[in-house]
Structure formats: C-alpha cells, structure tokens
Image (tube, rainbow, N blue to C red; front, side, top):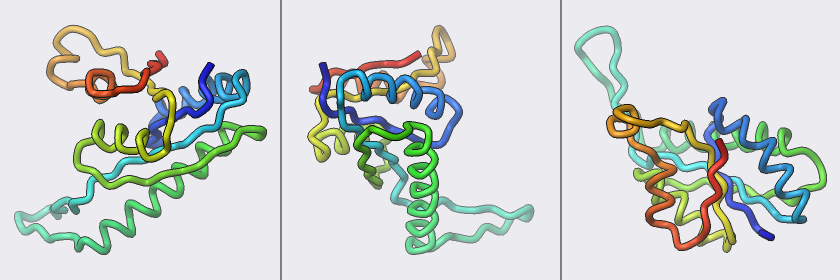
Amino acid sequence: MFKHLLVPVDGSDLSKKSLKKVAELAKADGAAVTLVYVSDPLPPMIYSDSTMGYGVSQKEHKTACDAYAKDVFKKAVTQLGAGIEVKTMHISNSALSEGILAGAKRAKADVIVMASHKRTGIKSILLGSETHEVIVHSKLPVLVLG
C-alpha cells in the first residue's frame, strides 16, 4: 500500500507506543521508514531560582538538540526492529507541523504516520493538536494511530 512512511518521533511515551504499529505497517508493505525529529531553532531563556535569567547560546542549543535527536533516533530504530530500512532526519523549525511537512517533502514520503493524544472537547481547543495541523495542511495522506 505505502512504500515510504514518514514518522515524527519525540521520545514521548505516545511516540514510542506508535512505533510498534509503524513496524507492523512497514514490514507488511515492505516500506521504508524515515524518522523525523523537529526541534525549535531558537534557544530558550533558562531561568534559575532567582529573578535573574541567563541565555543559552545558539551553538549550545543546536548541540543539545542534535544530541537529543540522536538519542531519540537510536531508541526508535531499536524499537522498530530489524528488517526495516530506516533513515533519520533532524529538522529545525519553530512550528512543529511545518517541520513535519517539510520532512515529508524532503524524504519524498508517500504517507505521514502520526500518533494522537485523542484529545476532545475543551482540551483539544486549549491544547491544540499538531496532528490536526498536519492533517489540515498536508498534501499527503496522514495515518493517525490511536
């Protein structure tokens, strides 16, 4: 059915749970998987216990994001198991959904496979949904795992 799955990962429990289903899909279709991690390019302001804050340099932030992405990818590849062609992609974008869509385009994926928190009602309005944003703006099919 699909030959190239783009799978956003972030190291969360929800992301980890979805990888089992992704592995089943990839093996069933003989599909390749590209894992994408999106990080914010702007370093955050870190505050100590006092009222004085200190900044994190752009270089330190990039180094930390790269290290975290590498760790997330390593764990995700292990969870996917053997027999699946896996590529990784770390994208810097302040808008998560835009980063995911850019990753799908760059990887030439034919489907985006995402997990969802399944928020409804007021929670979905207040907390928003990156999955919803990807669905609305994607030109590719988006498979939502629950």
